[in-house]
Picture 1 (cartoon, rainbow, N blue to C red):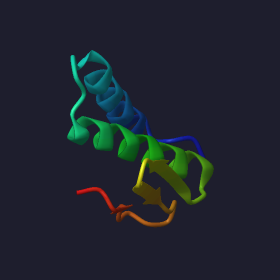
Picture 2 (picture 1 turned 135 degrees about the horizontal axis):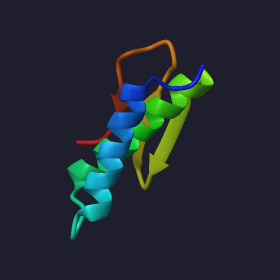
Picture 3 (picture 1 turned 120 degrees about the vertical axis):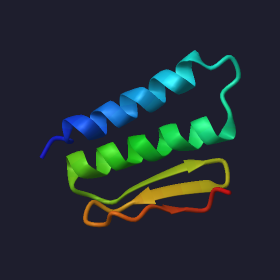
Picture 4 (picture 1 turned 180 degrees about the vertical axis):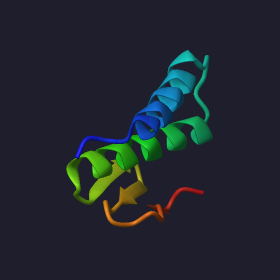
Length: 71
């Protein structure tokens, strides 16, 4: 039920990169959000949707393909 260690590691790596950036880039922000959504979806076994402004990042627990309107 709880996220795979490597998925948590990917989230922590993205969080570290975002947090230590002087000015986080759009790419770093999107990566952090996508890893968070993936981790929570796998932990909960449910669809997770995160809105950041007009950008939607969604993940279904059974899907391996990310859905995002980010450019």
